[in-house]
Amino acid sequence: MSVFSNYINKRKKYKELVKYEKEREKEQEKLEKEAEEEVKTEEAKERKEKGNKNYILELFDLIDDEELVKEENKYLTEAEKEEIKQNKINNKKFTHRVIFIIVIFFIIVLIGCYFIIDANKSTLKKESLPIIKDYYYNKFGEKDSFSNLQYLCYKELDENNKRVEKCSNIVYGTSKSGITVMSVDNNLLGDDGSSASIKNDYNIYLHDNMSEYELLYSNPEFSYQDYYINFNRYYSYIHTLPNGYDFNSLLDSNKLTIIDTIAYQGNINTDFIKNLLNKLSDSSRFIFVKFSNSYPVEFTYISKSEYYDMSINNQATDVYDGVKYYEFDRNISGVSSVKVNKVSDNSVDPLDSDYEIVNCFDIDYDGIYNYNNKDIVYPYYYMLSFDNLNSDVIEFDSNEYEADEYKDIYVFSLNSKTYVIANSNNLGIGNKIKKSKGFFDNK
Image (tube, rainbow, N blue to C red):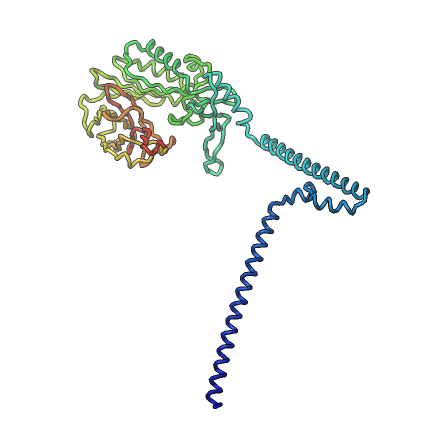
């Protein structure tokens, strides 16, 4: 055999050997894979069987393997059987004791938590809330909740000239029906939902003492000094009056605050109003607008510290479409002109997203000043009428004001017009209405 033939044979055998090794490796891998699958199947079966067992009960020997027990009993004496039986009974007793102890522990914890919460419950909920609820039920004949019960707090300067919050002994809350109830030291309870009879008595009192005037409009705002720290017409609780007081009793207390905007015909008795103010709080004031032939002809402002009586010129100026400006006596008034601009409704953000502000106007005035005689102080009051504004007016800047930012304005409606009296510059006013819901909003 030649060398070449010998090489060919060896080469062939080598290839056969390599092929055999590869086939053996594949067979080995197949066997290993089958073995792994079998192991996984057995493990899964074992886990499933274990999962069906109640190990907690087995721990306390509450589940018996009957077959195992029977098998064991064949090799046990009667004494050993009795011992096993007694051990089971003891184990069950121990289990019951453990469960009982755990239950008692949780009961004690719950009772302890209750007493801790009750001990930390505020005086408002423990003492004031039941009193206010009882008052509301006895006064209005129905039960209601007062989720926002709170102390009346205020801010003042401390010794470091920093504004700090302090709380008074006055408690107030608003029911779901919208009625505010207040108390002072859990006494002197009152509310802002039952002043109709007082308003009626007040109007009779004015008529009896000013018989030469005919009332066209009146909207008195009543407040009581014991229910506020700093007076603000726009606080939600400010119109609360004490229970059991009629108008004369409130007048005799010297704690009543009245702010009234009155439109009238005829003549008013300003001396009587000044005497009346002596019985009222310092925050009281009266705004009178006299009409003749359906046209405003005179403006009178009376408080304890101010008195203005100004005639109104007989020619109103159109300052915007549907808006008129009534010029007061220029010998007294410091306002020379008023500018009114319409503001886009959607440019003003209300505090409550369920509402929107419409019929929005921005008001500015130009004033005059006497630089030669600084003793002359001009009143800067002005009056406007609006055709498309109702009397439920709110104020705004770019946003709706908080109560502390409100400026004093006086509003009344007469002869299909809404009249606004103010003495503020850069004043924004409009009507706040609830948004109409679309079809999908009602879903």
